[in-house]
Length: 116
Image (cartoon, rainbow, N blue to C red; front, side, top):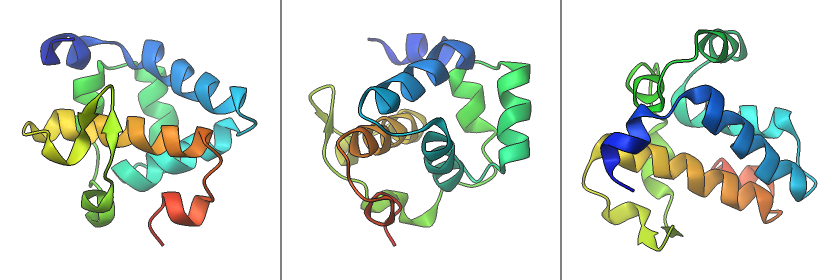
């Protein structure tokens, strides 16, 4: 999928898919929110405001208060692409979140997901 299509997707379309993926494997919406907050720097209140506002996915990440400094430690593949090799910083951040939710769905402990 072309970057511009990913950036243009509405948060209201993506967020439920992230939650469903985690819930199918016995994880919770609260855990998904925790991962999103860790990566993006949103608080629960500002995350909820963004969900109500429903920006496109690119804007959601561009407006993120601060991408976590340990995000660069996220490695592996998402959709057959190594996240650490993605050149576009915005797309890399989006794929970081995909990877974190994958780890959550695979049952990885939260401490490891959050690189503690």
